[in-house]
Length: 255
Image (cartoon, rainbow, N blue to C red; front, side, top):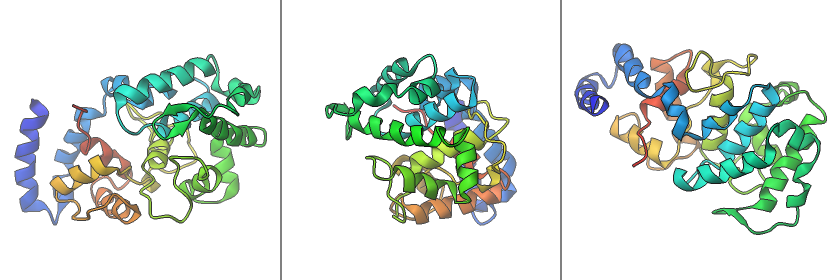
């Protein structure tokens, strides 16, 4: 209730200040504080990488969890739980020991548009990464490429991961990077110390787009790459060192 009351009060103020959002920076921070709390983790896919302590386990869990984080949480959270029970006690060992090979010929549905074979494909790419580099962070740094572009290049042949050079908003990939890079957060893990949170983009899907329209942040109609750039540009005016924090302002608990 407090959040809803605050929403209407703040929306009225924002309509008067929409050309100067930085003038309401304290109010934006307070709205983000409503959801950037430990309690958020319990119903969010970020709960899975939070189960682990080692960097590589967190990376693998985080990537797979972000990949399948679409549709109904009531459906995909149990699927992710099942996958993690297969990978326990260590996702890294699951990958290094090639325990995923049993999924190669399994073409049955795992979740909506994804089959168990698709998980095999994800794990195969991860196996290649971890047999060459000590972590996904080191792999991206060594490439010298922009993280989202590299992830698209390597995983883009897999369902639900956008192909390189497309117009997709790449919500899952931006969310994964948010989890890995943002530091000093009650929700995000912040284990990638060599990346700058100020370079992150706001993860955008249709729900976030609707919220951004409601807040008069954008008038764009599609959740695509240009919309991500526009919303992130706005976010940098409020949180210049941490634009992805706007994601918590644009969040509402699922009904």
